Length: 342
Image (cartoon, rainbow, N blue to C red; front, top):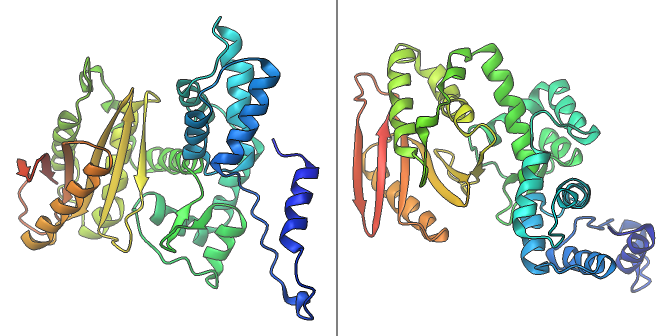
């Protein structure tokens, strides 16, 4: 990883330049995160030192995908590969699969570090901060990144939030997101949704992958049986969390789900599930009528194109009285979309 000399050089480069009388007002803008090409440089040095072959570009991109360049996390994943994964096999060359294995190790709920302990402690100690992160991670809420907002500022100071390219609030990296998600999920299931724990079963896992259609059908039946009489306010707040909690014992560490931010649209949340070498896209959204539904189908279709997928899933929350618990297989353009209403 970068040593102190490298960091000092980076700072010196930032501070050099025209000797302006206004230098006292210069902002300190040193970005300590690693970019993919910087990770590549470190991997190159490592491969030369160890005399091994690496697909450096692919591994660097995957490390960046999970860490967003957070130095400690980049180093920790590499440490897992170097000290825990590689020694247990004859093949010493790294692959992208090793990064996946290291990711599973670092987000394992039985593993923690001082960094992760501080992450949850900060959320526990600041109720308003907890609510902010809850709405982003669990409800997929899209908020403008306004540093003048004390809670957004605090989350930024703690390294939890960063501004996205669209200047929205974004969890710093996928590892933080998974750790926060697991912590909030455990708290929810322990205090309010213990009846969900028994829904993990082998019937959801097939030879070809994950049976998402069956998962949605079972969740619909679960909601109809257990939550049809709950008040609208509860379902609006907890509906998405109930599905995430339902999904958790099914994946059970064998797969992961990521909440992708949706720009300026708080009524939908895209869920990307990775299981084995496959990805599944589920869009969670509220029912606002047929016009908005058609727009949502177009958004999902466009999102599926990003992952080169021809099929996707819709979980639609209808909070109207007298709603119908139904399912529908929708042919939209060149996509096949399975939708259920709860």
